[in-house]
Image (cartoon, rainbow, N blue to C red; front, side):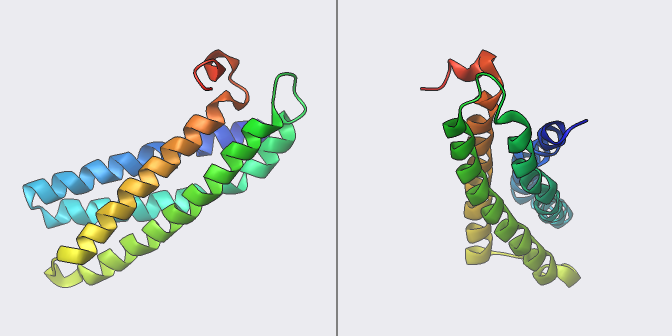
Length: 149
């Protein structure tokens, strides 16, 4: 396994984990189940932690593929810029999730503005991570490059 393979393995965790945790949170809100909401907050925090290997392995993955035939530097740069934004937003979300876990301890409810701000950040983080994945796919996946102009 090389650095590019490690990057490809680890980057799926935030890409899939964020929308999963968001769906879990929405389900917990819809069902009014505090335990499910708490599990979602924990999920967001764990996804933020799991984002570190994906982010940190990006540079090494670039070193592996940048000289391969058909790999364009511009695609790597676009992906790298998107990844940086998505990573920092996801880390902020992870810290916010930890705060929500702290605020919700002892049976207290998280409501109003805090919950609305969290949901907004969670949707933004999920979208940014999806965009990062979309930009990263064509770097060395010629079969999907035609779908991007």
